Amino acid sequence: MPRLKLTAIDEGYTVVVSSRLLGADDPGLVYDAILKLFPDFTCGLPENPKFPSEQDDILASDNVSMQTFLEVIHNQFILDTALDYMSANLDENGTVFHISRQAAMAGKVAFPLPGENPLGGLITIEIEGDNLGDWLEAATWHSGRENIPRRIGDEFSMLSDGDASTWH
Image (cartoon, rainbow, N blue to C red; front, side, top):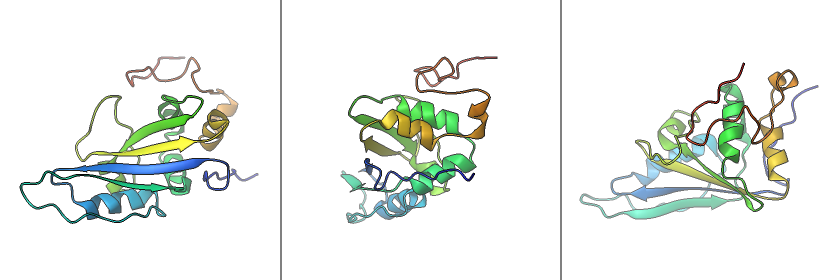
């Protein structure tokens, strides 16, 4: 049976994708990086900054599909890491997590260590909806979980500082 492909569109979830532009960040390059993982992202762009720049803008779009993002984390084989990272801030209202803009420019997903702001900036993803934890587990499911089942917050989850928990 083929894997069910979730998108968060028409599934009862709201997805907001955003990225903060500071200083000399090129709005067009940031927009292009976001589009690699979220192709239906749409918003207006501010003018390119001129040196010296005090730019402080936000590119944001709501009702964004998670389809391409989820395909990329499946293709990169980082589903358990994605489950841990995407659910780290999960509460009854939803979750928020960040990914590297620099990795997104290459069509990849990289999760920064908690509290770090990597070179190139961040893309922020906010997801809201009922039973979001179940959706995250389903969206990151892979056949290895038949042998080693995973749940949000289980003993195999990464530590709060981003380090891997050791298990055998």
